[in-house]
Amino acid sequence: MAIQGLVDWRGNPVKKKRHGGVRTSYFINFMVMTVNIAIVANMLNLVNYLRGTMHMGISSSSTTVTNFIGASCGFALLGAFLSDSYITRFKTIIIFGPVEFLGYALLALQARLPSLHPPVCEINRQQNCEQVHGFNSALLFIALYTIAFGEGCVRAALPSLGGDQFDDEDPVESQLKASFFNWFTFGISLGGFIGLTLLVWIENKKGWDIGFGVSALAVLLGVLAVASGVSFYRIQIPKGSPLTRIMQVFVAAFKKRKLVLPENLDQLQHNSKDIEVLPHTKGFEFLDKASINHGDTGTWSCTVTQVEETKIVLRMLPILISSVLGYIPSPLLLTLTVQQGSTMNTRLGKIHISPASLFVIPLIFQMVILVIYDQFIVPFARRITGYIGGITNLQRVGIGFAAMSLATCVAALVEWKRKNIVEEHGLEDFETGVPMSVFWLGVQFFLLGIVDVTSFVGLLEFFNGEASRGMKSIGTAIFWCVLGLASLLGTFLVDMVNKATRHGDSGRGWLGGANLNKSHLDRFYWLLTVLELVALLNYLYWAKRYVYRHDPRVPQQLTEIYDKVSSQTGEVAAI
Image (cartoon, rainbow, N blue to C red):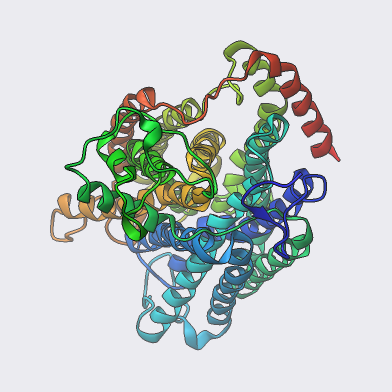
């Protein structure tokens, strides 16, 4: 049985029994794991490299990392545009995966050669510490943004390629698709766990050059894995730029603004050759005029499906904006918590624990709870609520944002305690050696893990599921843009807070300078707590009013089928 709009790698119509399904998700999730071995570990440990090897200050190293995260998410838009419009999602991965490999290779080269980074200094007292500058600084940022470019394009295509392997019109495959996104996130968590236990240890003990080299090899291995499954994929046929189609609707609606909509909306212009034929919906009536059949052709001839694609994007905008505001504390907590840990007692008996490796606590939690959630909680909740996923995607996101506000509150309390210990022992002029266990940071990391289990998966599935078939990569890119814009706004917030709180002869703000013991990080965390609570209330307002494109409830007659599929998914996962 062929599926409209999908072909195999040779361009022939796909066959359900041969192409797509759970089997193809193995190749995709393997790359998800290997890529995240590199990106998760380096995203959290990079701030130590920037401070310890490149001798950057607190705010500059933190903002460099958040800008890097933001750029990689921003580049996802480019990858989505290319994969939806011209080169397919599979080719996007094959082309831009090696670009990410090149970025890690450049970082490894710079870390290897002493002439490409500042000389070693007494970092504890910042004596004769020269910050990276000139050519070496340029090389550092070229390498970082090469990684961001490749990573962004790949991350836009990977989940969308996975989603293409399941038919939304088939009730069995629809449930498998919902399960795929849980296992997709499990792959991210597993990769992060391996990266934070093995790769971080390699970087801290064996050298940053070896660590970045291993990161490059992990990315390359993932690309080879996806390439090896080429004969099994269902590949979406690009039908031109969805962004162009949206612009056509706005222009056509403006040109036809004086026309009157027909009473019978079936008289609006349809096209059976569209990738997915979308029915007319209420709302944004001014856009409906774009599809009036007025004898025009070419650029100003829009179909109902084009208009509905545009409506989908407009309806998602309030969720997009409110989610960006809700996610602002996440990248800041990640980078600043690692810097907190670098000043504390990082030993567990005779074992030295890197602060970045603390994130294994929520990662282990994520992997366990994702399996429990997918196999047990969802079927149980489905019987009570009637929703395919147990709860709706937006409800899942709301739970995550509530956990985020609690995480910032806990972080403020822990930092207040750490600062008191610093003052009691007279350690204001030192950057390490605070006699307080690094495991005090475990609670805020644990709460961030809850955020990823709920908000991360919920938003990913929401934007991918609500987007039309011809805009799946754009939908995924919108999700990454939530994280990217949140990172960039986090950088802006740090800069604004530093400028607004400068005082005294030093002219430093709350997060100014290179010594965390002289900062006021606790005050900044309290500010984040207040902002997150406001963002949560704003999100709940818009989420409550959103109407899903597809009814998230399970038809009563299909409940047993869905439960059976969940059981089969668990058996496949165990294998």
